[in-house]
Length: 488
Image (cartoon, rainbow, N blue to C red; front, top):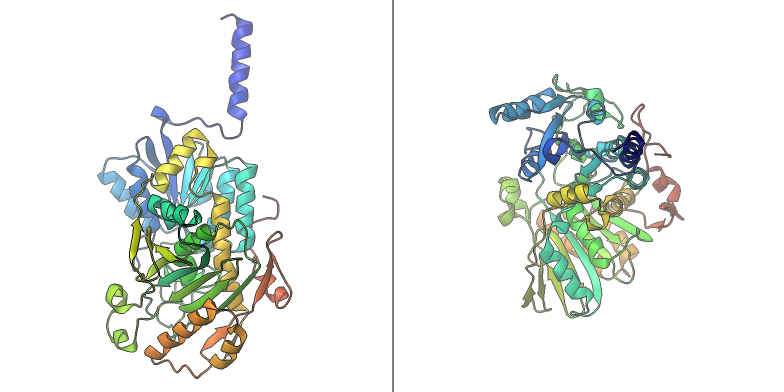
């Protein structure tokens, strides 16, 4: 090769390196992952530890960096790497990790209020993203996450449980093919035990090991008004999305998948309250929601209390299989009700609950799928990208916003408002039976009747009655410098 040919070839390589989506991988063609958010020791282990465990099992993947603003969480996992003789970088500030050119992709397992902003900033840093549920804390930032994915040509996997199952996909294809007639309604079920988080008398100290400013990030930096900083943030509106956004998002994603809608519904209403104890949690532990898609609506039910009051004297949280209600035989998941039967858990049943068919299709795990697409850049092969995550999370946010702008009403007043809503009215009566079994005084104004909100799916803004109040909750006032801007 002469000098001119060499310069031409070098120029071609330089152009290729500047193409969107092109990356220079690590030694041995490894995908180098940085995990942001290791997890809490309170109550349960963190999602970050699960992601570390799962990604380490995938050939050609190396955990190259760890990040957590709580040194105790970070040090614990660093010690695990030392025991295995594995080298890994450590960061306390995720921005330093994003500046690291030796990181190809990040796994984001922080509290909810950080998910979208970190995803956006990772895309801007040229990194692919695996973001845990829920993908967003509000509707606005979820849409901005989608825009960042496209603008920076990044792979963004916004994962939810049902998409991992080939059997569930096969069962949905079965009903989409008309084998059980038309879909009448899709039920999301999250009967998940939640005991009280306690009630404090005043501001609490934050852990000395934690950089509280970084932990708060885009959320208000306010005094800690609960016993535990970690995990119990799920029940604070500033940082979490309640049970619907914690575990319910998995079933909610399945519901939207079943009705095959790629936009938000035109109407939504929720009814609920935080019942059974007086504690520092803000989000409802009991709620039903109507997401008024046409021709088949989604009805979602959240219950955090046991099937009756007697179980509240025991540890119902650890004995959910015995203590919690079930719907169509499930405690968590979704049921697609059709004219001629229904589908749940990757199996089809007739209306007499007789098994018709079980589905067994398998497919790669979502993390394996993510790594495969990071290598191939074939985005159509991704199980759930940022748009899928945004829309499913949007349903959670619609439900919560309706509840937040609602007012407490007597049960008969609520009945009058929803009496024409068919399956939703039936869901309400099941809820009243549940509250009666827990001896919660159902003739009082226990439940908040949310507003029937009208949504413009194109603009993702509310219109009509209560729209001014509801639109304030589409976004938030971000705390500088942790701002999700209009132009990502």
